[in-house]
Every structure is written in structure tokens, then in C-alpha cells.
Picture 1 (cartoon, helix red, strand yellow):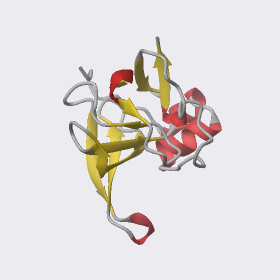
Picture 2 (tube, helix red, strand yellow):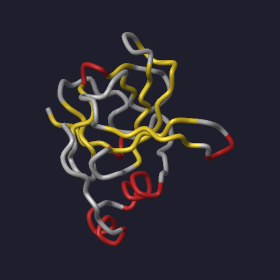
Picture 3 (cartoon, one colour):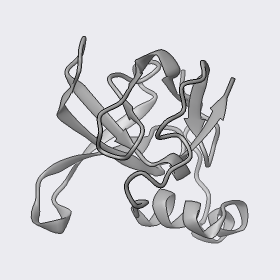
Picture 4 (tube, rainbow, N blue to C red):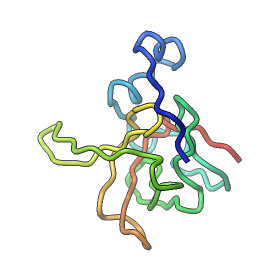
Amino acid sequence: MSKKYLNKSEKEWKEILKPTEYHILREKGTEPPFSGKFVYNKEKGVYVCMACKNPLFASDTKFDSGTGWPSFYDVICKGAVELKTDNSLGMKRVEVLCKRCGSHLGHVFEDGSKPTGKRFCINSNALRFKK
């Protein structure tokens, strides 16, 4: 379950996060496809937010979408993430944000795996993995 929403300044986030993590989590960036450390991870565990350690996804919901980013068909618990309409780059998408700290994680699409049919397409640099 998510904890109380964190409110840090961008200066504080810059001190906590590596530059690539900051770019993805705070500036809504992305990593190149197939470059992330968790694309092929098959270990059992939990994926948490890189910024605040909020539990986000369980390894048993991860699937190979072939897109080059770690993909999950569901969140670990209701309320772990916030979904927001994203009209950037001339297309309509749904952005996935960490509910606890507001960090950008990736996007969710309706072309995913069963049982939900969702594909949470998440940047590896937005995640930590706990076995």
C-alpha cells in the first residue's frame, strides 16, 4: 500500500537521484528500448519506485511485451500508481506516476497480457528490484 505522498523540491530530488534517474522520474524522460537492466529480469521479487521505494509491481505480473521496456499487466496493489492523460508528442497516452512521490514511471496501454489486457510499460531506471 502506498504511504503518504512525498513532497520534495526538485533540488532535493537532484541530490538523491542519478542524472538518468532524475531525467526519467522528474522530467518525464525515457530510456532507449532494450537498454534497461530489468527488460529481461526473470527473478522473483517486487519492483519498487527508484525515488521513494513505494512497491509498484510484482514479478509474477511481468511479461515479455517485445517493446524493449519491462512490462506488467497489473500494479501490486490498488493505489500504488496514479494514471494521468498524456497528450505530449502528438499522441494520446496514459502516463503512470508513482502515487507516493509523483515520479514519472512510464505509460500504460490497452494491448497487454491477460488477465487485465493492460501493458504497464515502465522504464528500468524508474525501478529498484527487491528479491
